[in-house]
Length: 460
Image (cartoon, rainbow, N blue to C red):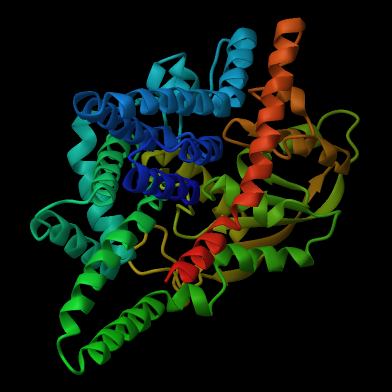
């Protein structure tokens, strides 16, 4: 997403600096970014604010340029609307058939938002300005500071330099500053999930580059200035590599369990601790007869029912040793934690136990794994189960609202719908045509940075 947001920003800034015009090409890349992740809408607002400023300025100073940019703005808007047509039509069909819309629309437009609330989910609130101070504190101290303190320092120095040292701010600098702070405030008022803030890393890198450029220019007046700069960059590189030495030199506990799964045969049963994040469980055991451990009682009841043909089945139970393996919400579900602990007590004395030690996580990150402590325990024992049940285990596998694999029982998906009628079918065909066209542009866009670098090199 950020690749296309930055690509759109590049052409937006370039077009204005060179021709004082609104870039239509930037709308194309923003459209791709919107299809990748709808959170791009926050960045789109910034583009809209600057386009409004350009039109306002042109109206006061150059009516001919105003007329041109007004036409380009209309085209810009049409491109964005057409790019989002697959999203709009999907939500239209979904609402028409089931009365619900996709998560972002439900969250911020308050359309049946209750559908997306429940245990472990916090997606129904939308914007909550009261949480902004605490969320910003978490973003700065937990995500930015602990994940990459050097980047945070350089970016902060770059922002301070732009605000204090530049007597006349450049258009591109102001655009990127507004983009960074506006997006940060909006996202932090609604979402605190760590992955949503990786979008800011490339923006912070640009501000850090501004400071490094300023600092290097100051050193040019010193005979050995370049050596100081190279030395500092080398130190930064070494420190960054050192800070991620754990992930670079070790396997994660999840990957180790996946390797362990090679010992599990198609006739075996796997019980997965409910405290293990569903996405990790799916990846570790996707080709095995696995089931969430909370279903064990039902499984035994079915196997004990009349007509069932019980057999001795080798069974594996994967325990989350630290009580929360990826969810981050188990502390708020004491009943779930207690039920899993009771299962473990029942298996402890009848099992062969294998311990899976953690890899080396980045220090200070939630869910840290250490190489000297077990992250998972795997219990191996036998149960009397009717193997005929195994095919039906697949129907219990879901990740939030999706069945896994999704295409196995498509009708059971929460967002499954059928299109009927001439208008709806036409809209569906147009939407898919746009989607596939944008996918083609996405692939072709990967060569653009290389072309721009080559072009810049030839212009030097």
